[in-house]
Amino acid sequence: MPIQLSQKEKSLLMDQRTHEETCVDKYTKYANQAQDAQLKQLFNSYSAQEQEHLNTINQLLIGQVPNMGGQQGQGQQAQNQQQTAGNQAQTTSTVQGNYNQEDAKLCKDMLMTEKYVSGAYDTAVFEFRDTNVRQVLNHIQKEEQQHGEGIFQYMQSQGMYQVQ
Image 1 (cartoon, rainbow, N blue to C red):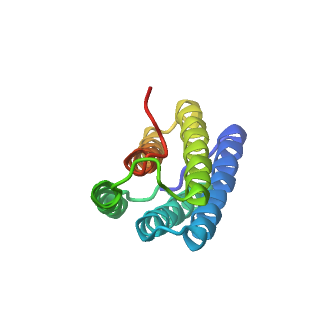
Image 2: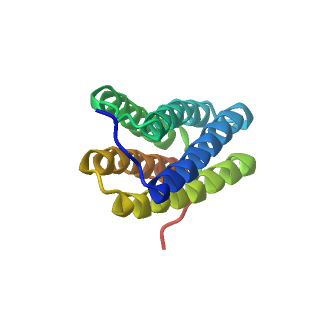
Image 3: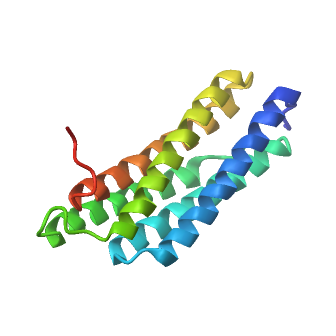
């Protein structure tokens, strides 16, 4: 049964669509620019997940609440890939602080982007009337947070991010 979205809900979804389009574009572009193979893999994985988010938002905009079953499996797969990439980076980075400065810039930008996008989802979740839509948006937000965590873990393992 199609859902009826309020004007505010449509507006929020259109904003999220723009955010997801930006994430897909940035991850794709940055995967091509990254020097480190593990970072390329991480960014390519996140680009694919952001495309799924975009597809989900487009479904919501036409009044369909998607089944999140398949995406949850992909989300777990991407999370496993980010942990593997972080673990590999820890074993291959023998000198802390000896990292590619351009890769660090890409990571910093994507970490900042993920923080912003996650916050935007947080606001949207509270603005929707339909519980199923809230759950879908909450699921996407969780994956955005996992992207941020994966980038943080990569950066920390490479000496790009020092926790004070």
